[in-house]
Length: 145
Image (cartoon, rainbow, N blue to C red; front, side, top):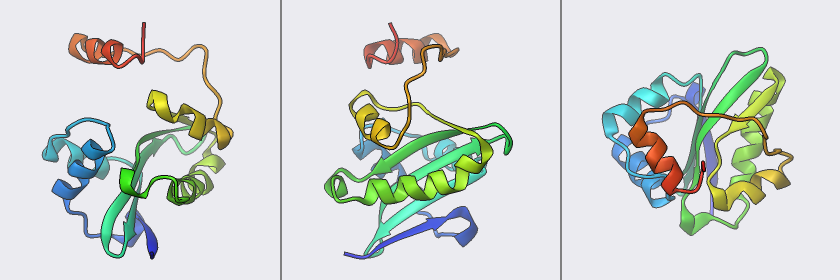
């Protein structure tokens, strides 16, 4: 299998419907195509992984380019997980973002161990402000008490 990782600088041709389906298949929930496209276009950094031409990995991030970056929607197609692609994606991400200080990720509960193996550490003081419907969804998912 041939894994190719592209960034926003490579100007990849992104099929937004395919990206939305990948994110949903990975368990991050359904995404409106217009909002998804806007989120990636307004992110300073984005990554797209392809295997034999098929989109199978993604992530995007925003940064102040000085002290911290926020990493979001890190996804490997479940059919490709456990084969080292996630580590390759994360290595590229960390090579890009770590010069800008802290890298913060909002991880799915079943993925925290993966990130801890990459030297991410849980925060004791992280907090979230969001609309009521988002807080309800986060509580239901076990992300907050």
